[in-house]
Image (tube, rainbow, N blue to C red; front, top):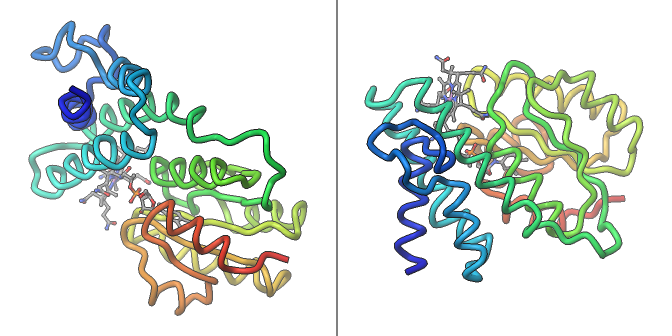
Length: 224
Ligand code: B12
């Protein structure tokens, strides 16, 4: 039962069906959308991580594959992203773990020139759920804005996301700017085009391919 719903949810993300009331896509009219299915799965006791890993992320991955093959276009990615956000808003409360002392502060943002925020939001949400205080600077964040946040929270760790090969350069500039003033700040990076060797090249503290990896990095790397 839950397996069918997970599959249906993955299709909703892929097709951009956010809610039951949404008129798009027409062939899914009146069917439950990402919001309703997520609500039902949570009510059935399915773990938020399972919903994320088995429905939401694979759904988005499929949209990306179609976009790459010219089978889907920017508007398709946008409605899928919107459906994903509707589901993620419901998972956020499940993943947040509010009544513990924060393990540290995590400043996160998508670098300058880059508007992709789904992966960054997931990382923020999971790190918060793991017990960190999260300061989310949003998207298109300049090096100065990152630096400013570190100046206000000098003990914080920093996470940067980039989804475009063209914005990876902004990560380098931002790391340099932070390191010039705060040489020991923990800086972790991620996003589809980013690699471990790129992290080493730009002198970031580490790279992780997913939110769980981000948590492991943050908890493995000592934060002053
Ligand atoms: C949705 C999407 C969009 C949406 C974004 C909506 C939003 N609010 O985010 C919209 C439509 C706006 C968009 C726009 C564009 N996009 Co786009 N987009 C995507 C798509 C389909 C999915 C991205 C996504 O959300 N994935 C799901 C999340 C969960 O995965 P993720 O972001 O990789 O994050 C995970 C990890 O990387 C990691 N992670 C992420 N951040 C961080 C940070 C840290 C610190 C750590 C440790 C880990 C980590 O954890 C996450 C969870 O596992 C990808 C294709 C793809 N498969 O990646 C293309 C893609 C990224 N887009 C692409 C392009 C080209 C564009 C545009 C230039 C298109 C255009 N012609 O206008 C614009 C650029 C706009 C801009 N300036 O940023 C290309 C990039 C190619 C490249 N190599 O540079 C891709 C790869 C599509 C493709 N196959 O060609 N896009």
